[in-house]
Image (cartoon, rainbow, N blue to C red):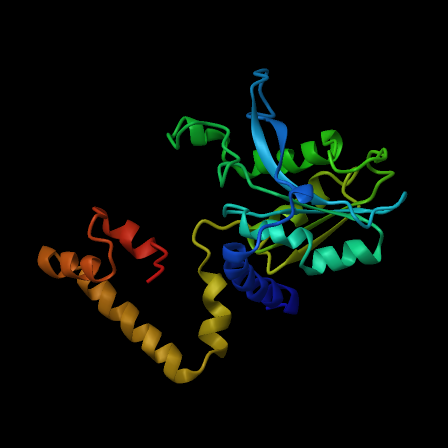
Length: 257
């Protein structure tokens, strides 16, 4: 795992507590961009796409560092515009740093609900087009000089994990407007059942920890694959998931307890 990703995780934890006592200055946002709900339809309906921007260090010729917050409401990550490796790089290069929220997270809602019909536009193709739209059409309200369009202005797309995937795919799909991408811990090869993600833990983790994980998995599988409803219900209840009807939903659930 890269140092950037680890630092981002630590910073995210710090910012979680920071947001309870501090507020990002209003000059950095949030701002709202009229984003097409469907980039690949004749329908011209738009939604308010939320973002933050730090233009303090910008001088003519500087780059724009663009970060899509990925699969989370971007409120905490909005602080990255002033406190992150991206913000440091922007200061060094006399550039701009932008944090944009991912569609269907936080306040960036293309629809009023999460129905299957609404979620049809929650996909990678649309998310990449969102980033491209930011690059080509966004006018920053907190920048008092004209920002040349790409490729004259160099856009560097940042990201970690899924957000890193988006960064890498942006450079591949839109090389004419994306100068560079910095993806961290980004599993760019799509896979339906990506069990390889856990291989480094299985191979390099402490033996006693790996044995404990195996024991827990074996125990849980033994219960879930049985036909005895009481032990299954008791197991789900122990993890605060008694409301989940299907066992595979329980097995895939990310638990916060």
